[in-house]
Image: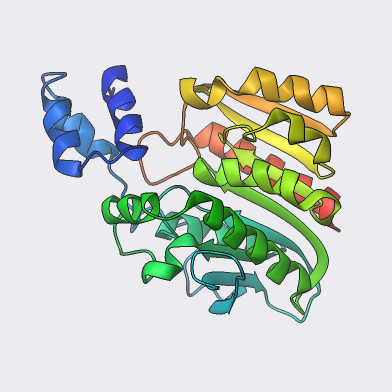
Length: 287
């Protein structure tokens, strides 16, 4: 059992400039076994993959495309799709605040296995891409202009929408930072976005803009997630006021990041249910 204080510290570590060394040192001071608990929370990507890159049921490739107005004018991402010529319903997969790590690549492969053409962009393209570890990744991403990252993600959605394998109906899902991006793209893209599924993502910055949302929304929250959940009620009221089509779920006794199966914050039952709801929702809205 991991002490709630260690979970809270880990959340701070993930969303700040705290180094891994400082995280482990502070954890050691919070509990007798704090160091061991903190070590257990660090991601283990190698053993967590659900769909291997070599899976013969899907096809994957890294693609590079233009992103006018973004951080560099170019973007790179992982494109994954079922075998065949398509067209397929299309899903943009947006990473957390550390670039395109192995977990998000795996989510893209899972989406392909479910029948979608999926694009997982890397916001760190401008600085050479995900560096191979989350510590450096979050520092690199924090130095980038967040508004330009949003432009990069918006351009990624349009690249996917126009792709020859896409049926032109695009949805977006994302996690943490990517959840915020999912909500923001629902505002930014209007009727060009058909569906958005944010996982524990903050509401759009300006709730008055919620009236611009035309996409159908499926919103996933963790129960233990004070920062994100502080924006939940206001977002819900704005969505109701605007007449938006949305449904939301809060998963009991879950931590922020419960879908990420590479750390002990992962809650298998909730993660499986949320993903099943997500794929079924996209099948209904994007076909």
